Length: 366
Image (spheres, rainbow, N blue to C red):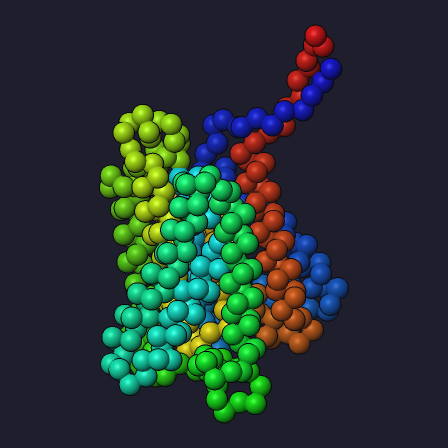
């Protein structure tokens, strides 16, 4: 009797993996080219606009770079935060909810602290976002440690609870609801006061937001934390084997609680950065960073340098598709989403095929 078995490949090199990824992207773009031709659009022109995020021939190119960074920074931070929990095999799927919690708590500070010095308000916004999201992550970790709950289901359900809570706030005009504009007949989230908007470093007309600089610094800090500190080593040991960690005298529950607090707090901070950069909040402000961050973390094999590269490339794809679609009235945002989905699916499939192989084995019946 012959059975199929899934076997991990040996001898995989980084070069081979990169070649497979590039082949997957090329196949996806080839399919996209066929679709573009069917719409009467030159694929080379579309892809040129996509890969350059609309910079070529654009006198407002600096605006495109600023828009790209507003997509890149949240995705980078969420991906790094998820990698922290994934490294200890704690499946935190609640990035979307933690992001929104952080953004809404930061918004509450922004609306209530009008008139205070800008730096103080921004610091309070970041602290509120990190503490609120961190406490949610801590609660999930406590349930796991105390009652052995399934963290995947708990964090997944939390996403929808938070999303609908934000939608309720955004659609309910009431005296208690200070999140909405008072001068609008229909419910609309209000714009932040000027002291709550993220400042930056002016380079000509280009505004390099401080959130970009901070995210790069945090990337270096997280890399050092995971690779060169005792706490980072404990995360790796817990991820390899909880029993080994306990045998070595590590306080496993404490490690899980601490790491989940840090992971969720970083995602909340990303929400605060995004809200402050956009000067408002909305239910769709995550730009699916909580979901895409999972893909980025796994594609990079939970490596921080890999996350930096993968987040940059996927942000380029996301913002590039949007920028290119603006130049062609025949194409809407749905085509951009289709292109993103095809490329991500193809890359994930190539990653699976380069990591595993299917073998046929004959088994004798007993």
